[in-house]
Amino acid sequence: MIGVPVLKIENLRTYFYSSSKQAFSRAVDGVNLALEKGETLGIVGESGSGKSVTALSVMGLVTAEPGVITGNIGLKTDGVQKNLLQDIEDYVKITNENGRTVEVSKDNPGWQRHIDRVLRGVRGKEISMIFQNPKLSMNPFSSVGKQIKEAIMLNTSINNAQEARERTLYWLEQVKIDSPRLRYDNNPYGLSGGMCQRAMIAMALSSEPSVLIADEPTTGLDATIQSKIVSLLEELKSSVGVTTLLISHDIDVIKTLSDRVSVMYGGRVLESGPSKEILSAAHNDKHPYTAALLASIPTARQIKAKSYLQAIKGDVLDTINLPSGCLFYARCHQVTEQIKMQCKHQEPELREISSNHNVRCWRFFNA
Image 1 (cartoon, rainbow, N blue to C red):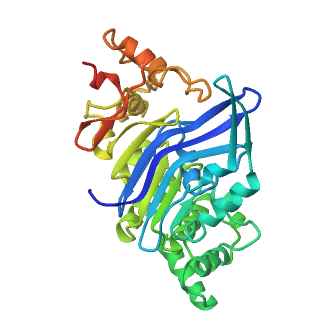
Image 2: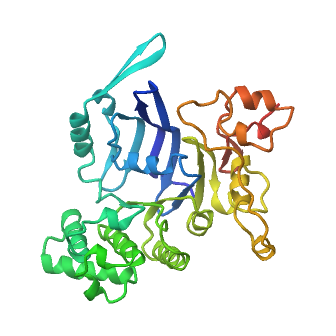
Image 3: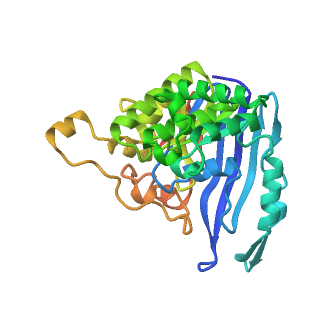
């Protein structure tokens, strides 16, 4: 799929400063992603790999003090063409002594005003987001119907309350929530987790956004409801065709819904390319981390034999004390003597090994 990216993330770095350690936690560290019109790009990785922080950075929701973002986030649609991080560095001051950061100051009110100004007409309209916990993301004191109706009147050309109500019922029907007219008047706490997630999806789609960000849309739901939400998202992808950035630690969800996938670890992209190719157990040319993730998924044979699951050895990377070489070196089981020193001391670049398939690993590039 070749075209002009709707959303293009370039060299995104989102750091959080620890005053006690006088060092940055590099939650997202030089990420490049491109999302083309109509496609679904999946981001997969363990907890702490930087997936959700990437999404929050795009939405301008990094508010922790002093969270610092640099890079470019380009949004190009019929209605909007802008860099969502334009001039953001003007609100942060970093003091260095002897090559070490000793102080970080941030104009938080100015930062927030600037973000709100840049994202006015973008957040909720051009880009919508489905959050991990819909019950915490919705107003508990207002009915789901009223909240969706308000989103429609705020982010679309519909300004008639009755027309907005009918549009709300339309979207509740689209997400297959049972008894839409009854659920319209229910508050979030009166809905099950699955129904609340459907209502959140309806709200996100109701503004007909150019980009939809779905951050762990099946987290916290039981297996049966997860399957139904995945089926719903698959149907909506076909019928609505919205451009989607899908974030999940569930590889099966990514494989089902995504056209392309980026595998993140330690705030970096270690592999990217067609999801059917990268997430196929039969395809051998993949990053050792991706292979380890796939190997940790229980197979029907393992379940039948009641055998132990295969875990990835070691701990998730500490993003404050990063190694000088490959980020996955300490946990990698595919290091050979030939490339050991390179892996330990020199980080590989993300390079193409086949058409649209990029990997950050010395196994593929050692001379």
